[in-house]
Amino acid sequence: MVCVTSPLDLAGWRHVYSGKVRDLYVPADGAEGRMLVVASDRVSAFDHVLSPGIPGKGTLLTTLSLWWFDRLAGADGGRGIPSHLAPAKVLTNGADGVANTRDDLQSLIPDAVAGRAMVVRSLDMQPIECVVRGYLTGSGWAEYRESATVCGIPLPEGLSNGDRLPEPIFTPAYKAPLGEHDENISFEQTVELVGAARAEELRALSLEIYGRAARTAETRGLILADTKFEFGVDENGVMTLADEVLTSDSSRYWDAAAWQAGTTPDERMASFDKQIVRDWLAANWDRRGTPPELPVEIVERTAARYRELLERLTGD
Ligand code: ATP
Ligand code: MG
Image 1: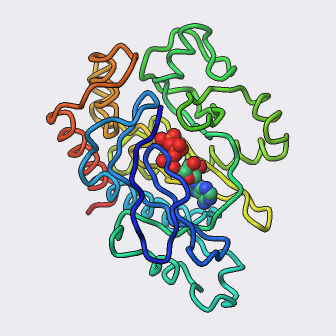
Image 2: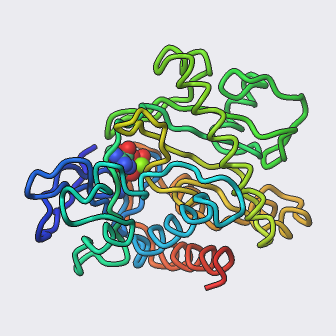
């Protein structure tokens, strides 16, 4: 799959990479340690970037990520989780004379991408998608039906799609290069990839963050069914939360009241994420060749659900 994007010409920044959803830029003057992450309106499903995009999605994802980064920095009453938004030491010593605080850093965002970009510390990214599941669905449900396990973790018999798990589980995936499919792996394979200490750290951090976020979501009548984190190691060796966090792209959110009352999987899993897109694509595409254009109605419903999630979580 080729990811077609035309990077923007942003004063002070040089384009270096485009993922499925985001475009990365580094300082044009060669300054090290920071990056500009710009969220686009592109939407991906089954590892393909679809057309058209979802209008406003880049801004909604960025707003939601920033809100969660704040909560996790301590606004929710918990301890501060190290994140790539906080300025690194190298940027706080004032040596570069520009960016000393998080606000200083965000002031480096060009107007052309205001609202959908973050200035972050560039990290040594771990090749693991740190997935946590509190509920059974998606690829977890698919594996469970085959083997009664998810990523090698044995689960009780008789669970249905959308059921709550006895406790949240860490189900990592190997982060495949662009265009390839991320692969669910066991904890042992994670240890082989990053070493035992780092693997333990990733698991503990992921479960901690999921637990905090799920409790926050619950107070807003939402279920955080599952989510994916990415971490990187900073220049001091600290495992640091990176990428986007707890957005409707990286997570499944369901309406708690519908889940309680629902009887069919569709009713139970009334979602605020891109499940609408996944479901439409699964029903209208045999997964060969180029995916079909998304109908206007699917685009609009998805945009509305993304907006609704932001409103329910943040009260805005
Ligand atoms: P998808 O998320 O849809 O699987 P992707 O991961 O290929 O796609 P994007 O999410 O569009 O790509 O792009 C973001 C990229 O930036 C990812 O490769 C992510 O690992 C990387 N990234 C995020 N935060 C940082 C950071 N602080 N330092 C270095 N790289 C980062
Ligand atoms: Mg990503």
